[in-house]
Length: 173
Length: 85
Image 1: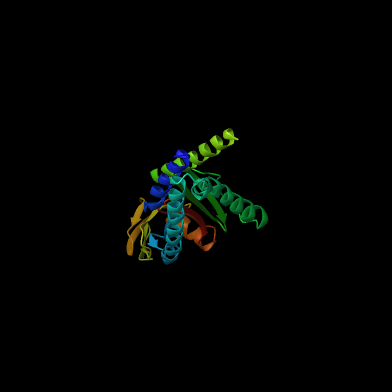
Image 2: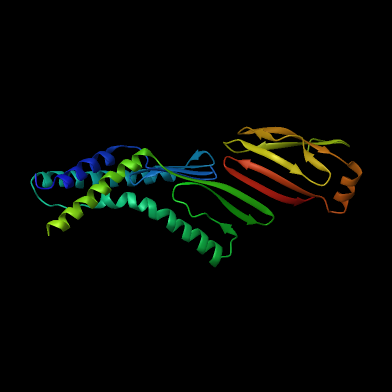
C-alpha cells in the first residue's frame, strides 16, 4: 500500500461517522441544552424535547450517510494506491473550536455593542462560565456549560492523521 | 395570596414548568422568606414570608416605598428581581 496513513485516516473516520453518539454538550443555564455532533442533534428547552431537533436529525443523518459513502469510496481508491483526498473529517472537529468564538462575537458585539442589550457572554470553548443579563430591574445569571464528549477526542484522530499525511506528501516533493 | 397577619404572609406559588423551581429568597425592609423553597414541576406550594415589623411594612406599602428583592432559580439559571409593592 502506497498511502497507509491516508488509509487509516479513512478507516478511523468511517468508524467515527458510524458511531451514533454526540460529540459535544452545550447548555445555557440548563434551560436550553443541546447534545450534538455534525451528524445528529438533541435539543431541549425547559426540559422538553424540541421537535425542530427531530427534523434537523433527518437532515444530519442524511449528511452522515453522504460522508460515510464518500469515506467508503476513499477506502476503495486508496486501497488501489490512488491518492484520493476527502478532507471533510479533517475539518469537522476544527469547527467545534471555531463555533464558540463566532457565537461570542455575535452575542457580545452584535447584541451588546450594536443593539445595546446589556449582556456579557463569556468567551469559552470548553468549561463553565456565567452569562449575565440585566434588564428592567432583573438580573439574570446563567451558567454556560460547553463540554466535548469522548467521541469528540476520538474524532480528532483523523484530523491528526490527515495533517501527518499532508506533511509526508510535502516532504516527498 | 392565601393569608396575611401581623407576623407572616402566606403565598401560594404555582410552577407551570416541567422542571422544578427554587425560590432562594424574597426580602424587603420588613419581610423575609422563612427558608428556600423548591416547587416541583406542575405543582403549587405555599411559601411563608416572615414579617419583622408590621406597622412599618404597612406604612411602606402605602407610601409605595417597600421594595422586594426576589431570587429564583431554574436549573442553572438564577433570576434576581427588584419589585416595588
